[in-house]
Structures are given as C-alpha cells and as structure tokens.
Image (tube, rainbow, N blue to C red; front, side):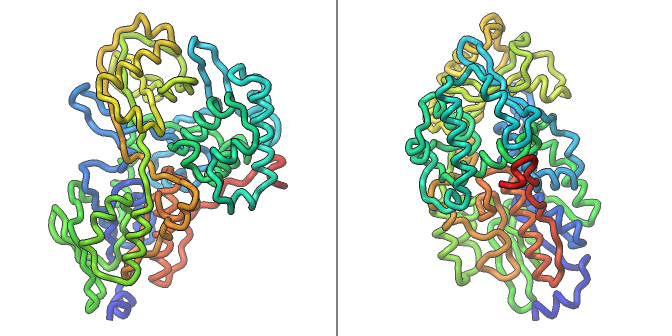
Length: 477
C-alpha cells in the first residue's frame, strides 16, 4: 500500500524529514528540495552546521567557530553545495602555506609553474624547514605512492608502518607527515590507514595546483549555511531547530514515518538520518526492529573519535601579518589570523585562533594550563606577541571532532543512501564515501543519500560531483 500511495502522489506532496543539520544533512536536504520534494530539516541544536559551526560565546562576547575547518580545491561536492546555497563567495582562497620554526624562520610551500605532479617541487626544494635528506626522503615517498597505486589502496598498513618501511627521516616525519598529513586526518600516524594518507597526498599535492588550493571561511562558520535555510524555505521546505528526535516509527499500512521530537510529532514519506555515529547509536533503541540493525550497531561500535582543540586569543595589537601558518616542533600546530580572514568582525582587537589537531593529551589539560602553554609557544614563533597584551581568551575542545580512519575501518563504514529500514537512508561523513573525516565526505554522503532516495521514487538524479580531473602529467598516471 505504501508503494501505491507514493506512486499516486505528486513530487510536491511527497515529504522528507532530514534529521541532522550538519553538512551531510544540509547537502541532502537542499538537493532533495531542488528535486521538488517537501523537505523538513530537524536539528537538535539551535544553529546549523553541526561540528562545522559557530556560536555566540558569552565569556568573550564574540561569535567563534567550534573549531577551524578548511576545504581544498579537490572538495568538489562541498563546493557544489556551497554554490547551490550561494555561499561560494564567502570562502577565502590561498595556494601557499607558510611553515614557521621556533625562533621565526619561515619556509613557504605552494604551487609553482611546473606541470603536475611537479608543481610543488620548487618550493619544497627551497624550504629551509627541511634538510636535504628530508627533501630526498619526501620525494621518494611521493614517487612510491604514485607508483604503487592499487597496491596502496588495498593494503592494511598504517601510515606510520609504511613510513618506517620507506626510510623517512625524522625531520620528514615530524615536520611533514605528522604535522601536515596526520594533522589533516586528525589522528596519530599509526592510527591512519595508508590508503587515506595516500589519497590526501594524491588529491591535495599531486593531481593539480588547483586541487591543493586551501579555502577558509571568511565569515563565522554558521553564516556559511544561512543560505541553506532560505534555499529550503523558498522551495516549500522548513527548518526546525532545537528539535532533537526522541523516537521514530514506521507505519507499514500507509507507508509513512512518524517521529517524536522535542518540538512535537512529525510525519513524512521518507527519512534521512544524517547524524554523527554516536548520535545514531543513541537513536537506535528508539528505531523500529529490522533486519540489519545489529550489523549497523556493530559498525557504529567500531568507530572512534579524535579531538581538535582551539585557543582563541584577542590581542591589543597585531602580532603577525600572515593569514595562516603551520607551526613546527611544538604542541600548537596551526595559526589562523581571524582578523584578516574574517574582516567583517566589528572588533578593535587582533584575533587569532591556534589549533591543536589529534592531541588527546592537550584535550586532557585544564583550561588555564592549556591556555598558558599555547600562549607561551606562540611567543616563540611571533616576537610581537611578547609585547602584546591578551585582552580575552576562549578555549574550545571538540572532543568528537572527527572519526578515526585506522587500518580496516572500511569494513565498518555503512553505505550512504541505505539503511535497515524502508524509505530510510543514512548520510554522514563516517559512512562509506571513500573519503576521510572531512566536510567533503559529509557533502558526498548527503548527495549520495539524495540520489538513492530519488532512485527509490523511480527518478534518476545526479548530484554527486565528479572528482577534480588531474592536470599536467598526472593525466597519464
């Protein structure tokens, strides 16, 4: 009866509830609204963006990001989503990265004029942060990853094991693999499956100069998604904030879902669960029994979290003219100059954010201890910070910032666009998108879920954006 009822309904009459207002849920909801369905987005928090969001911090009377997020030119689905909601103009792009050693010596990595994959070679050879042995080790590693191809994709090695087998110097490990690659994947070297590290190297550094261009939000993160709410409302949809789902039931007789939320009861023909894995685990006992639920529970149980911490500092004067920087050989890893990256902020202070990736030790520190450590280390890189006065400070610890990608995890990532229940689809960065824990993975999962939902209605839609094409010599590799 449910299938006959759906067939008799027009697109505008068919309703979808998307649970989760992060990038996965937003990308799915906007795609489905574009297809003509009536979409209701349900989010338990009072703002959109999920783990890539911002909020008003009363202690500093500023809107701050929960943790810094960046995207790259190879993030085709995230960029397609931003284009759909009109947010692409709110991204600040750069093609170079400044690495700073304690004491202030700088090296600059970025794309040159050589064809891919050689476009980054001149800046690597000129980088004073690496010894000649480090540079030779890195070039050997990049070449080995290119040559090994399918062999790397199928291995169960960790990145750390592969680096030890391939003769990487300590300098290359500490200043590139641990800081740049492990930081990007937000995990320790031995907790990263080699295929994911190889994907980052290929996609960001080798395929093309444009693929490695780095984008940072020019506005607080939640402002990126303001256009999504308007996009949905303009197409007959709705956004419900502060409306966490408490239970869901499937009515076989009329082929419809009924949800109980903190904001009341809802009903829809389709359900998209775009939740982090720990939130889905909490909801599972309140979902209908179905074949495959135990397998999903097992898959969720194998997922792990890694934290990202940020120290937000407002100084009484500028301490650097850099927009962002990689900080070597210390606990803090990245500096983002929010006063330059987000010029719309109405503040007379100089605002910088320091980011510490994949550090459970830092996340375990007390507030003042963490702040004191970060400020002391910052002064080693920027002498101007020694004379500057800290006017206010905020510490954020996103303990569930990303999911881990250890060897073997692919067997426990459920397929996006499917679930054990009828007319119900999963989305989320942790599902099997082929990407690590990134906003691109989230956007891909949302687009895949939207495609699967439309396929269930007998309609072929193609929202999954293709990968960025390799350039230069990489077209033949």
